[in-house]
Image (cartoon, rainbow, N blue to C red; front, side, top):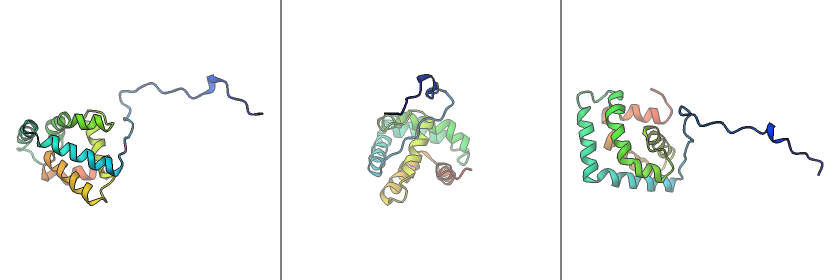
Length: 143
């Protein structure tokens, strides 16, 4: 009864949305990660999407180990193709959302099935020459 509430003006104000702020990190349970990966792989197998991904990968074939080419040519297409799954599981439908999705999935890499599904998904849009670099980036190892 003796506790007094602070006047409202001393309450912390919500920060205004900042276009440069990192989006809220989304985490997935192992079951969600498994479901999301299975849905992503199914979407990536659709003939239309296979064509889009093959075209994007062909454009970077001249420089298969150039991470910037991956980010400029392949990731935008992968993001577009995966957008329905990203949105369904609470990720932004942009490249940052795709990277956060891949990170959230990799949090469960000790689970053999999730690790295998994650690799299968990444292999559809990350060339083998860059898979180690991308894995390091996603696990927080830097470049």
